[in-house]
Image (tube, protein in one colour):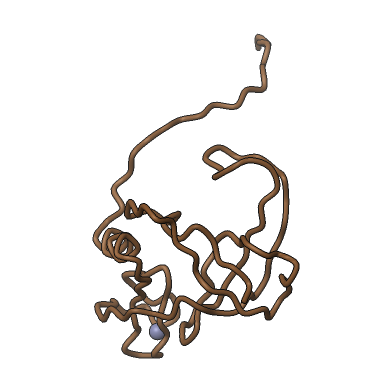
Length: 145
Ligand SMILES: [Zn+2]
């Protein structure tokens, strides 16, 4: 014998803290200094940003840190007004996969500034917030050049 219960659709927001671990902690410390760091794979030579502790291609531990360029190229982008919990700012926003110069992976971040020049392949550069907290949004956005 089964009993049916009423169900309700709800959104549950669950503020929490998490341990960033040693690799992301060091990455965030770099952001706090206005620098972007990646980790370099000794096997394939890829520089991964945000930094990783292991190369996803070669499965080797990464311990070499390199400061990377604050400029790169838009690989893909999207613009939307969809809200999500923790969304920075209000209204429409533009996100992009950015390949920073001389790195081996794409970096997901916001685009801002003059967006009339946004297209796949556009060059962008990091624009920093004045106050840095050791957070991904220390980089305010990437702006087309
Ligand atoms: Zn590798």
